[in-house]
Length: 496
Image (cartoon, rainbow, N blue to C red; front, side, top):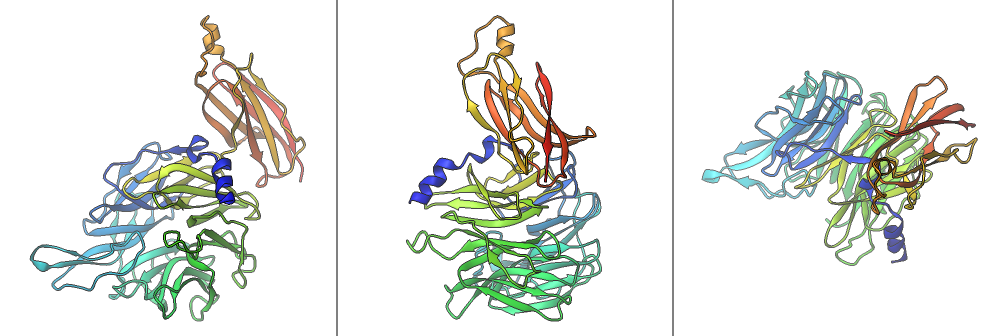
């Protein structure tokens, strides 16, 4: 209970800081995956409540999202990956009608229906694996290639170029007992089976070079309730595989490598909150020797889970949810030092996050939501570092010298905002203050903009924001405060 109280007191609201909600078309209920090839061009995929696959795209960094054209038979668009500004792939499933009833479906992943739908005349609606391709930047998607006939669902997906890619799939209609990995070297035109496993659910696949391939998921023993996490890998393109079991982990949902040696896998621990068993929590494991050994990172907040993890250099986030008996809140954990330490952010939405995309060091997107799909964007590398130092209205604008200076790798920048516009009009300051557009931008010694720390409306007061320089070289940098009425620049020094 003490840990829970600490969590509530110390975690800022996720969306009051640098994450901005992005409106999306109404004809989508769940977003399962988001992928940006650059800061402007991105696609997100999911489904409508009647299990019709839906996708949306943007060409202006999420300012506007539009529905894409996908096949009417699409059921669920589970994983999307853009490889260039024009070419991308989607893995998922399509609706498939059979003339006889099929056994009840057992898989519990949220992107799958828990049972078949029986249509008119007793015809049952099942599903088959679906692979889509776009050549126009995600505006139009078409089925492409031929999957093996016994593939019922595609889950995780990773392409290393336009031709070579891998997908995790289900070979059995009942789900979760016969999964495997498919490989293509023809951009999805044809596929071959390189891994087939019994009594497992394989959720994600990642490869660094086409030969070193990593798969994560969940396995079960003879008892249907005895579940544990697994990571399976090959170093020879799928000829031979090794498996590692993680008994204290309930499942791994995502796996990601920063480079050939350093990787992360995220999921959840054992436990059942509803049954008053051990309270579960999100888990993140890390390897520094290409998967030979994995060790657990110091991330443990009760009643949380992770669905996705990604890093750009040393900085990254893991996303998921924090749940209780009554609801689930969106939840993000952030690291700036390859997972050595983490900060955590709890959102206000009764929902959870399942995917993220990081097109550059600062611009990131996260998505999720059942019944009320969500996409949020940050332009500050996931940081929610701005905080109010004082609500007392200052007499004048001020930009203070950063502290410490020199610094390595984090420094604090403080600035003050008066109620100047009201004063100019001869009116007294409002007790609640008034919104003022504020930017704090970091430049390198050549005057190149490298990061936007603040870009929002702020009331009069004194604020502090952190700049984290892990991803930048030693040298002189400048921070610039910009408002409609005042701007000032100061110098700081990063020394490593």
